[in-house]
Image 1: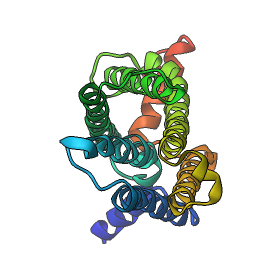
Image 2: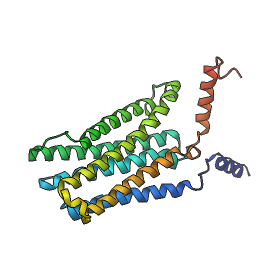
Image 3: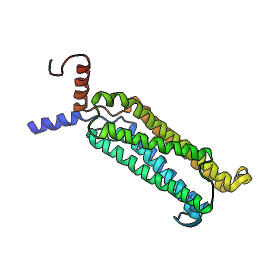
Image 4: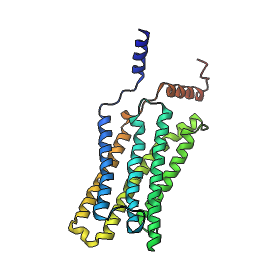
Length: 259
């Protein structure tokens, strides 16, 4: 009987998952995986495939950026919606690791395109796509570094974390949307370079790439919708609520143990 009571208490302490949330998350994953697969299909069917050496080195860039700064970054943002009953530290570590993987893969893509341009003698960083891409990388790295310092490693006070958290959430969503927009700019740029005037004649590559662009938008909008549903936020666990109450009591001039 006592063990049964404890199990009932533990189940009662678990946060209930909103009914529609798993379906939206599954839909986002379907869209994200389709975006990655279609990017690979586009590069394979119309751009010759992928290789680190030679003319195909450039193709490493779009695939890496889509995997890293679109799919993995989106999944990193969804961690706090999906893992609702794991410890906060475990969720933080997973959130941070996904961002690390996304950044590393994105850097591979950046190295590939700069190396390709150097070998071909092409100019760097002249287009709007490249400027936005550079901005995304800088903001992404700063966001990750500050988030790591504030939320994962000990040292930052609870009050400082509480004040910074809204900014961290906002910039995370903003950088993700900027990443999607930059990918769309790069896709359009690649099509215009190769197809030129043929783009307006509904070439098969142009149609496929346009569909890919719509899927990118769909993935971005779905992730953003999940993030902005206030009733889908990860509820605070017991220890988090205790810390919050202690902080509130301290800021009101009392001691947590005075009650």
